Length: 396
Image 1 (cartoon, rainbow, N blue to C red):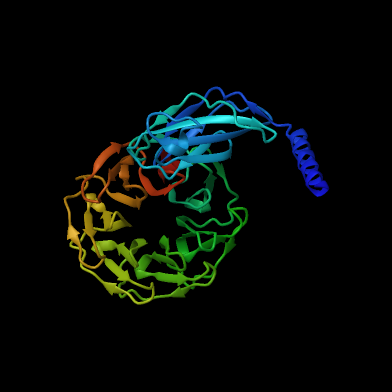
Image 2: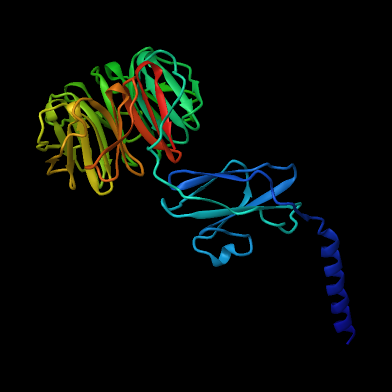
């Protein structure tokens, strides 16, 4: 009996001790909660107060509260949310609702803010032009942990969002024509005139020059998760496991190669006069009939299809990368210089032309401008395009 009362007293003492340590409290719901739709995502902003930890609740539907979230489809809770907060992994065309509550010093969550709703949608319909990035033409752009744009005279710029750009210290005067991010190696590469190849392993802080063993201009880069590949003038094709040591390969053509991509287990390179080459490993290459004699400038894979574009609106497609079909030209006049697939295909070209397509065959023109565009990429839930005289645009 004495042991029982001793245990009871110990338990009561523990409860009293824990209670005395609970100094936290709930916080009022935050003010100024707003939501902006993105591509498979939304961005929440609100007025943050010092010392308050915010939890964000989201679910598919017209409204949500912190209490109802768990019973609704696609409920998500983001602890320690910070404005602006991106909520990703959402389905385009679906209505989602959001609420935020706050707590102080680990206390219980307070009332949720009034529910706000948004419908995520494909990026690429509305484009916003930024201030010119100097006067040099920009010929390459990529996204890794941040955007990187490169161009004439070794010009390089970086941006976290594709909107606010900062110039990087130029380490070379040669023209740079292409950029790529190797996610497996966390390395940025930039390639260009005379076979120049630059590599950064520290988030664009410093660059080193790699030996490519070619003096031919390099026009495009690709990465498949383990192998880098660069293509260029006179059928130049080189590969590297690490971006530092390069080996020449022989695609069986002397035509200029302007674009390259990797998808569905296959590399596809395109170039002058409708040249088209394929490889499953980047080493052994075979020619394919492209069904066009026009110069092909860009190629991408997405939505289960390979797509290549080029001069005079040239458009060809393939489901396997080997057998190609000529499609109705995207447009009759502009030459298209770049192609990417993110959530849809985006083609960019001369005269600032930008066209979008969900399937690579049917195209719409959401935007056109004046400055020609030479490169386009997808990242950070949106697209960035760059071109003549430092022109740059974004679409979220």
